[in-house]
Amino acid sequence: MSAIQKIRGFQDIYGKDAKKYRYIVDTARKIFNRYNFEEIILPFLEDVSLFKRSVGEATDIVQKEMYVFTDKGGREVALRPEGTASAVRAYIENKMYAEGGYKKLFYEGAMFRYERPQAGRYRQFHQIGAEIFGVDSPMADAELIRMVKDLLDSLNIQATLEINSLGSFEDRKTYISELKNFLNEKKEFLCETCQKRIETNPLRVLDCKVEGCKEATKDAPVLIDYLSQSSKERYEKLKEYLRQLDVDFIENPRLVRGLDYYTDTVFEFTTDKIGAQGTVAAGGRYDNLVEQLGGPKTPALGFAAGIERLMLLVDELPEEQKLVVVVPINQDFNSEALKVSHKLRAENLKAETVLKEGSLKSKMKLANKLGGSFVVFVSEKLELKDMATGEQELFENVEDLIDTLKDRL
RNA sequence: GAGGGUGUAGCUCAGCUGGCAGAGCACGAGGUUGUGGCCCUCGGGGUCGCGGGUUCAAGUCCCGUCACCCUCCCCA
Image (tube, rainbow, N blue to C red):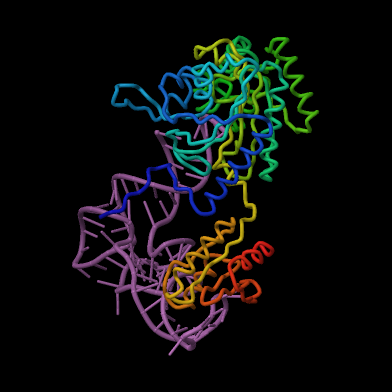
């Protein structure tokens, strides 16, 4: 019988990695909570057209990377490739706009994209993200970015923040057609992929790392010159607020994002420490999306961070609660040992009963392997051993032992 | 979707121009019949990723396939 393997690009996260995962998510929860975001738990499966209409019909995500299938009811469904579309759908469907004011949501969980796996890129990967609905002011953009920075700071991750403004759809449309004209004139100097990108993703050409392309696009039209007055002002405000919040940033006039729905502010936190997939968190504003998906006109913005990528950058985990290993010295004391562990746990101590029967020596080896800081020997009496010093102390009853343990842990 | 690399013990890997499948670590038992780590002794472990081919003989050569890693593309 050959063993079954996991699906390509999918992974089991366990051991230290699971701890990192949990640590990252817990940290994010804490910080998002401080900023008064509410959690929303979103479905993994959505109607395909949700993503077609939000992420964009022409994007790689929709064209090549979605897990799409027909369910038993004949519905065309997709495993979500990202979280924003679902959040927006939920915002509209649950009429959260009717609550008045504005709405701040965060989510966490698996996303699915059928891509070739590589470092920091999986077919099932996990994101933490947050969205703000109903705020027009760039104050929100600044606070959102500050919040992402808070998260990275608490995880002790250094990343560079790049920002840009894409303006409105209209601004961008004019710009893109100008850019296409420019690129078509320079076509012969561009690399093969960029020649194709002129039609598929002209903004991306400006980001190309090939020297020839860099040279050819040096004098390319710059998006910011095409922005409306209000977009420019918004962008200036954002920069002012970011400085006020002590957020360092680099302006990258060529920064674009791969999803169609962005307007005005876009940002990206990147690092060069984890290989080719350097973007660790990214987001921006999407003022048209809610309306585009059938809701009332609502300005909105958000971001998402890749948990696996953050995991590559986290090396220190917070200290865990110390473990007490309860060892019956022989079988006659098994039931007493179970009771002792039970009592320790009832007092919020982390206890492991040695569940293997055998020589005391083998149980001690196990206690050591399990990482016990203390061992409690259970016989006619109770004896506490400090595994670091080897010192032992006798106790008349569990209560006294617990008191001593609480002091020492 | 394109290119390159790698699959041998639980882990890290060695195995030359084809000729008995190995090491270190880890694991188990014992040395101490009520005490871990260090040390010593002994021991268990392999369809050499999978399928086919060449050969007297394949871990080694050839073809296919799957998985992983890396790069491009794209993105978190």
